[in-house]
Length: 194
Ligand code: ZN
Image (cartoon, rainbow, N blue to C red; front, side, top):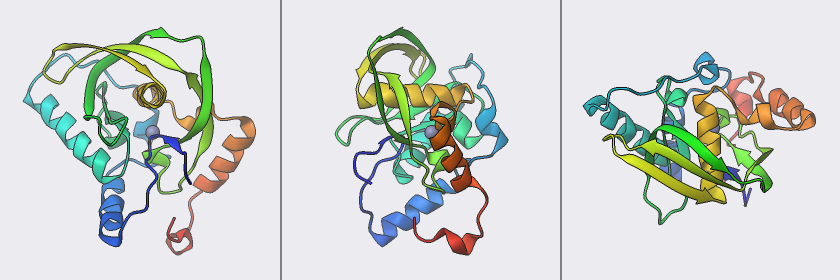
C-alpha cells in the first residue's frame, strides 16, 4: 500500500523486524478499547515520569513502525503525543499541544492508525494542509511548531486521539461502514499475514 499516510509507515519488513512490530503493536490499545474514546487530561507535572512516558512512547512508535503515537493509545490519559514525520527527522514529543492556527486549505489523504493496526484499516481523511501548534516539551520548555503536509496531518491525527476521536469518525459513511466490518472481531486464524 504505497502512499499511505496518517500514523503508519509503509515498507517491507524482514521477518525479525515484523515480529518486533507485532510485539509493539500488542502494547498499543486496539479498537474498540474504551481508552481510545476518552479525553486525555492536561499535564500539570513536568517530572521524570513524564520524560519516561515520552521515551517509552517514542520507542514503541518506532518498533510498531508508526509515525505517531498518542498517550491514550497506551491507556495513559495525559495530553502527550510523539511523532516522527520523516526517516531523517527527529522524534518530537509534545505535551499539552494546542492548534493556534489552521490553514483554510484542506487536503484529503489516506490514513492508517496503530490502534486499527491489527485490522490494517485505511480511510480517507480531510485535514488542514498546515497548522501551527503550541505545546511544551516533556521538560516543560515552550514549543511552537509550524507544520504542513505529512507533519501537519500526523499532528492533527494525534491531537484527535487526545480527544477520543478516531479516523473512522472522520471517514465517509461508506468507508466507515467497510472499516467497521473489517474491525469486527475475527477468528485469529482468519487474520492472515496482513
Ligand atoms: Zn491513530
